[in-house]
Image 1 (spheres, helix red, strand yellow):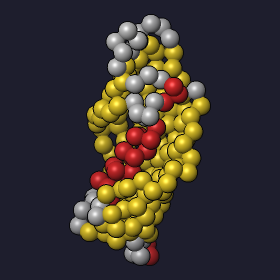
Image 2 (cartoon, rainbow, N blue to C red):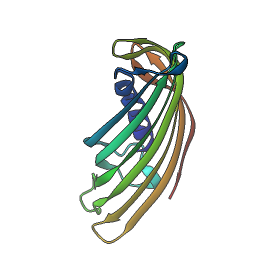
Image 3 (cartoon, rainbow, N blue to C red):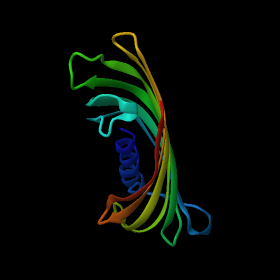
Length: 169
């Protein structure tokens, strides 16, 4: 799950980078984007903290801050918070509901087109916390840290190397 969220955060960066930016100092362009009541669903793959296979659904708010320099160097940070539901593939296992929070940041350099980055590289870092209660009364608490390097090819973020992918349960 943590890899999926980190990749999702990097892909969300494409949306932010496509937003028209206002000119800042030294040729820098800056943007802030706030999205509310967003929804995503994805498989718990790889499973976080040895949890079972299943489907994760999250409803969340997110705020992105982005700066792009005239030479194509960019950096962004974002925070995401919301609720989650985890439904295991094995129906005999408990369903979990709870909260999720994520901070992420990217740094890189790219050529930019009308809809965002076209080609370049980026390094993504994120931390995530999940707290949930199972339908059987059990608790699930996890904190994860992720750092990875991505190639930006024709506007798509392609994972190159995972540098850190650690969870504390």
